Length: 166
Image (cartoon, rainbow, N blue to C red; front, side, top):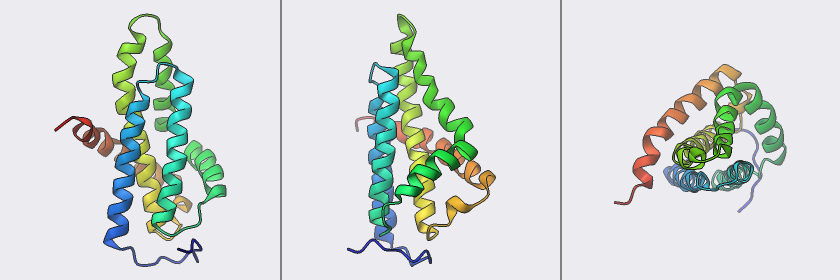
């Protein structure tokens, strides 16, 4: 399998879309589990590591070379510039865990949902980016932010059902 990409959109197969959606669900559920990590900084680092690994796996599905520079620049710059208000405020909510007593208990359930929905939204953003031939993250920040917010809301609705035992 070659991971070179010309930047021109190529036909996306149903199998690629299904594989990408499955990866996003898998990593989102893993991120929900990170909400149970009692150390606030460790849970943020774990979720960030899951996001990077998910982007790497998505790049393989769409036969893109792993976008190292894109991960560094676009996650740092684009997410900061376009998605930061939602993305990082949700990540920082893990600081609630540091509150004595009920902080950990109250935060764990909330953070499971927040972590899962955040990873879901990041996955959907990169899925859209790869399916666009690598151009979506070049869009206007308002377009990216709106898509992230819509995907975040979708993740909040979808993931609790996926996480509950059948």
